[in-house]
Length: 365
Image (cartoon, rainbow, N blue to C red; front, side, top):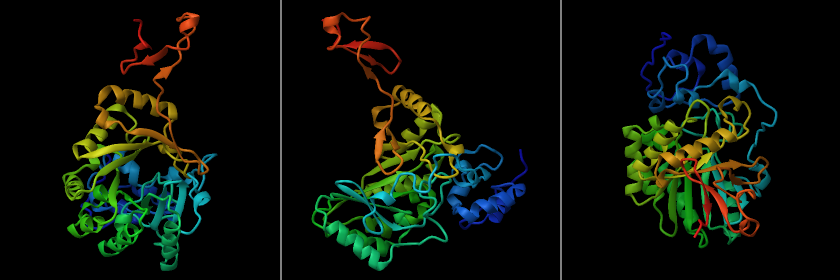
C-alpha cells in the first residue's frame, strides 16, 4: 500500500494538483507533472478516475491517462506528426491519404487525453478548439468536389465532444453529398464519459442518405463498465454498427490474457474488433511502446486463444504519411528445398497452425 486514497471525483481533473489531491499521483511528482501538463493536455473524467487503483503503481488505467515524467524524454525518430497528417492535408481539417476516404478533423478537444496520443501536439488547451466556419465550409467544398470520396471519418479530437445539435448539422451536411455513403466517427466517449451518450446524441448520429459507423477506442477490459456497456448498447440498438480500435501499450495490454479479455469484451458488446495499432512515434511515448516482435507474438497467441470474431488487424502507421500496413505474423512460407523434391518445390507451401505445428499444403494425395 502506498498510502494514497482515491477520493471520489465529481468533475474532470485537468491539473497535477487535482490528480494529487484525489490520490491519483504522488505529491513528490508535482514539479515534473507540472512540466508535462504545460506541454501536453491532461484530462481524467470521473468515470476513468473511478477505475484507477491508486495503490497499484502499475495500474493499466492510470498508465493510459495519468501523466508521467517519462513524457519529457523524447527518443530519436519521434516526431510531432508521426503519421504524416500534414503531408496529406489539402485544406484545413481534411486529411486525404487514401483515394476513397478522408479524415475530417472537426474538433481538437477530447473527454480524456491519452498519454500516447499521436496527435498530442495538436489537441488540448492552448490549441485551436475546432474548425472555424470558413474552414469547415472549405472542407465541405473539398469533399463535394472529389466524387471518389465514399467515406468521411470524423475525428480530431473526439467528435462526440460536439453538442448533439452541432453534430446533427454536420451529419446532415455530409449525408447531403451524393457520393458520401459512409460517415464513421472515432471516439473514446462511450468508455471515458458514457453519460454524454444521451438519446439526443444517438439521434444526432442517425442520418438519412448515409450509413453511420462508430469506432470505439478502448485498450483494457476494465474500461467496459456497466455504464460504458449501456452507452454502446444504446448506439448499437439504434442501428449504428460499431467497430473497435486499440493501441498495443506496454504495461496496459501487452500480455495475451489481457488482450484476450479486451477483444472478448468488445465482441460481447456487439463491437467487431477492427484495429490493434502498434504505438506511433509520438514524442515522449517510448515508455509505452512495445516492439513489433512482441506484437506479432501476441497476435499468434490470440489466434490460438479466441474466436475469429475477436481477431483485430495488427497495423502500423508508416511514419511520414504512408498509411497503415498490416504487420501481424506470417503463417505461410515456401517449403524448405531440403524437405521437398525439386519438381514439387514451387507448388507446396509451409503453413503454421495455431499450436505452432508446421504442415505442407497441398498435402500429399
